[in-house]
Image (cartoon, rainbow, N blue to C red; front, side):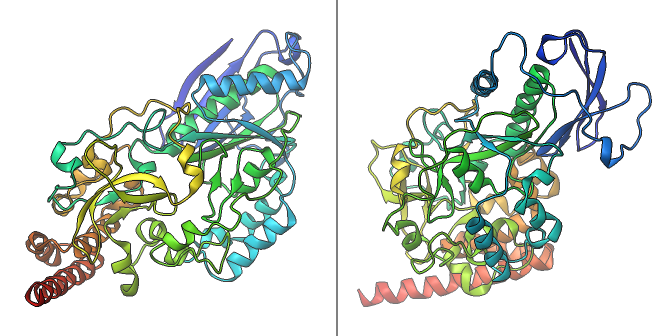
Length: 479
């Protein structure tokens, strides 16, 4: 019997569980109390005394029952398939298994070279020696770890992922004159760290109930070589856009990993580390040069729109601002092709293209050819209807949000993580690139009332709009 009781309401949720009755392997076990910890997006199972809580010594943190195959299953292969079935029940995507061992030497060498070149920008945590050490040897993550469950969760719009936003015929025709910004579609719903983290916690708990042992899970937060794990588990290969790509479903998925002390047989790895061949579409499509045809499988984060709008805490470099376009959180350009379509087609984005002032309607097609498969009925969680005010909101409206409104609007979204100041910084850049003269009054107000960071970008936006208007007037006169 397992009884869950909440023992703390802190941001890092802590839960206790009591295991009674039959133990792992079907034998009789003494009552045992364990402690299940959700570290925001990563967690672990560990023993905890029943009456008195104390800080555990490093040596006994993972002293659980020895893992064994339960009586109703025959082998560890059966256990693996039971875990895979549970992942499907939890509405996770393809779930694979890898041995807990060091990554490929060339993969770690490439990562170290990337760090040494400074391409990680201000993400100093990536270069911390303790994190590098865990990447070099994932067995440090969990004492006695033998296997890693590598799972996925889809986020692309369409069947099985996010539903298409409801829009008017006017917007579908590309006639929307509201001046909307673009949000990467992985952030259209609730924060994936919490959604997938909860599912991985349930998956880890299932494994502990079934066989004993210990586990720890991560969703895009720990010092884990996710792409290397995806390759070794056969989940996907690494593309030139530096994303993991599933041969049937493309690149629109999150990766989560569960480290476990269970000796689960590994799945077949990918036969090749990449299947991009001579294709350079994603590198050519990247507007900022973060990806380049001269650098296969390397992303210069300092120039990436996702980095600039999410990870960068200060000012966006002036020379890169025009290239950001109207993206206000993240970027999907290296995964999809932006193509004008008629009213009978589905679409992903409605926005103003920087410099051209042309409002167009976009259908997600391939920058990456592998994504032509990504719309075909994956098993994903039910995200609910996505509001266009989240997926491509009116930019001018966003400038009016105070802190309370920002917190309320993005309460469950990953967008909340960057805070209001950085978000408004992004909005100012997008407004500048939109060329929308109606944005000038709210931008001027922002220059009077907002932080220095927002003021700087609001001033740039006003100048940018004025320059585009002058350029447009000259073109009209010449014509």
